[in-house]
Amino acid sequence: MSPVVVLVGPMGVGKSTVGRLLAERLATGYRDTDDDIVAEQGRAIAEIFVDEGEAAFRAIEKAAVSRALAQHDGILALGGGSILDEDTRALLAGQRVLYLSMDVEEAVKRTGLNAARPLLAVNPRKQWRELMEARRHLYESIATAVVATDGRTPEEVTDIALDAL
Ligand code: S3P
View 1 (cartoon, rainbow, N blue to C red):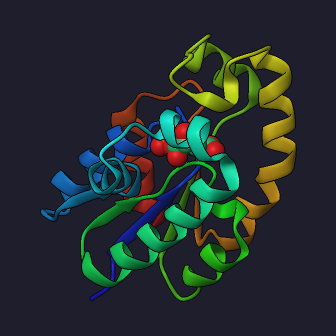
View 2 (cartoon, rainbow, N blue to C red):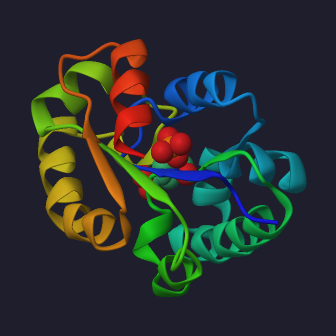
């Protein structure tokens, strides 16, 4: 079993909204590795970050991605930072991977000061700039299709994605 499409991209870009729309349009299921992790661990992702740190979270995430890839045959959304892990990136080889992108200003606008997102608790614009610089090339390295979401509604992004896939 293998997902129809794996969705990657920064937090707040709309992976879950677009993922659900894509699942509807393709008459298939939607799954999100963040949800899997919360269900499995019985605690919020922010708590895992605080309790155990980012490295431990990435290891938990890698296992969750591996499991979901093996079990799910619909749309699969990954956490925004999952691609930081080399092994996780390797798991995506041969998959159809859709990268939803946005620029820094769009990211700041969308996520604002959302303390539930542990990586953006302080100085979000600077954090976003650094985050995008560190991650953009990693998203691009594994993507088989890219859709820019800036200024677009989830429905528009979904339509463009369906053409691009
Ligand atoms: C993270 C993104 C989050 C979540 C965690 C870390 C990141 O997922 O996995 O807070 O490092 O970018 P979403 O992209 O689904 O918000």
